[in-house]
Image (cartoon, rainbow, N blue to C red; front, top):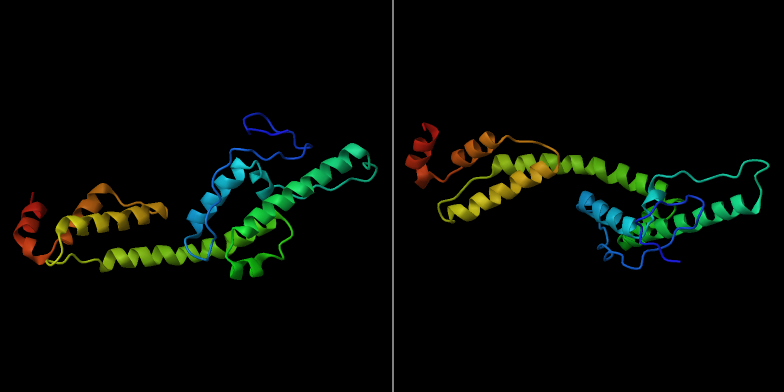
Amino acid sequence: MVSNGAGPTNSDAPVTVSVNHAEKPDKFNGLDFKRWQHKLLFYLITLNLARFLIEEVPALKEGEQNAESVSAVEAWNHSNFLCRNYGLNGLADALYNVFCEKKTAKELWESLDRKYKTEDAGAIKFLVSRFLDFKMLDSKPVISQVQELQLIFHDIHAEGMTLSESFQVAAIIEKLPSAWKDFKNYLKHK
């Protein structure tokens, strides 16, 4: 039986993989973790496996050794195996070797999250530095330089930092090249 993922899920039933799933994301090589994580999460959602990133391993309670509960735990273990291995196979070989000892999809996901989300804090500092060091040059077209600065603003926003529109406008005016000095002064006093 194939599920399209639209209906409610029964946690005791084995997970069925959707036929129309998204394209597998590129392998993660240690760079741009948030983007890769988002793509892998979407991929796992299309495969109806994302819940294994947050669920604990089910355990059989004493006296609960009936065929139905044993079957449910086996189904969970199989689906977790798929989810974990989709995650591991989404890693570059060097990272695969580091994280392959993780026993569950949840353990793998949390381990990657801890390691690479903290490294993303360094990315924020790098973006702020890129913004502060950005200077427009007379030798390049102003429009392309403004677009480059807007990309930096976008990256800063994507990292969760907010810059008001008036700050962005003032920053662009301040970073105009020296040949635009008169226009820059006009805009400042407007």
